[in-house]
Length: 366
Image (cartoon, rainbow, N blue to C red; front, side):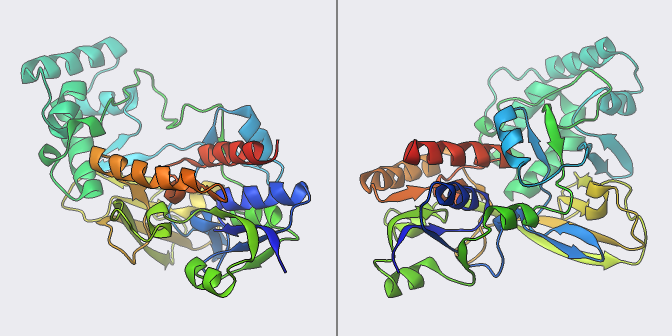
């Protein structure tokens, strides 16, 4: 049986495209190498708690079109992301705001905070930052950098801040209000019942085959579809013709604890480099859970290598140049649509994935 579209990847991008193509009368088939749908937004129920299997996913957007679209498939609670950071025995609110500054310097007013930061920056006398460390110091001063940025960033990147290029940090948001809401977004929350049910609804009535590698599948079914929507790695699709694109990856250690409340917050960052994980997620707090047990996940940022799940593109000059070569190849083939963070070699928040998926749908059908 021939299909209009073979969609590779049952994550958010692929599922939106499949849903919208099917609405338009197209015949589609979806395959995914994982044993489940929903890609990295997959949630599974453990101890009656929706666990974010591949890291915390907190939906936020200021795009009403995107918000209205996703609300067709779920109802969101009113969760507001207010992470905290632990440095040694000190606890600070994130993002950097007046609660952070008042705790750090025992001050009360925005002007006092601005004065302290300006004084620290002036004392450093950095005029032309040569690396990430100097760039961050020139933006926020010594105290915020050393307690809340340095160790966390070094764990994320696996190297010292003075070895990282300055352009990685273009700005660091400083908020001079007592507001712990991490996202400046009009709409935010967690889908009631988890993310997997969203994708289940999108893929209703669509043929889905899991545990299936695209390259094996297409060898056995070379003429299965008129077009392909590919959400895997663009470099992998072209057999790494120009070399591997680089990523950072994350290892998750998830455990069930026999306690009602482990850390009192959904997201707690650990900013010392000596602590190996970057943060601990306590999943029940995303949905205000009252279960008798809890589930936590420790996240470890790691160097990526082939065979490991890629997470964050390393969008430096060398990798961007390499991606442009693959993009040019992709543009020459009109029967393949590349999408998602791997297909476009770009880190996307969920709302942006929805936006670009709908743009791809519009370009294809409207």
